[in-house]
Amino acid sequence: MGLTTWAYSLSESLLSDPLPRRWVHSLGVAERARSLGPILSADAELLEAAAVLHDIGYSPSLATTGFHPLDGARFLRDQEGADERVVRLVAHHSCALLEAEERGLRQELESEFELERPDLVDALLFCDMTTTPDGLHTTPARRLAEIVERYGPDTIVGRFIQRAAPEIHAAAERVESRMAKAAAEDQPM
Image (cartoon, rainbow, N blue to C red; front, side, top):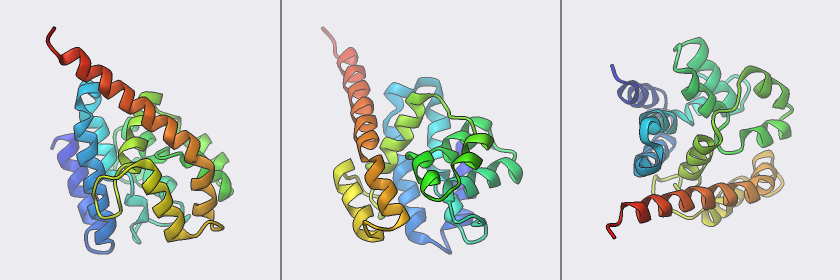
């Protein structure tokens, strides 16, 4: 079974029934990942797999710490023997270190999972932060506002996402710049 086929099947089995909206979001994030093919080359399949798996830690059957990047990455590593790079991307998606800090779990996350290459971390962050909970495209600004509104500004998630906003915007700009450069290079002279 190929990496993406396995990833979609696993994510669906963990999210589609207990958390259908989270499943739809994950499908939308994976669709965004596919759209980044021009800047990913050999890592396109890797990013798509991580994108569809990024939120599996929300599954009630996996949630142990209540911090979905850590719970999902541990499951992928310990139960699935997943590709190490996919595991690292899931563990560190969307500024997870900042949220881990808010939850008192930064040491655990950092010691268990190395960061993946910055360009791939940016790409997954971009895909997540430009996809609504319903799997539709959005802007990082709208996504951030939606998260703060849904969770509240003074909650762990609200505080973390507000702290992460500058890095989220910067990562989105880096990805968009790389996509624009790739599109320009594709244009005939």
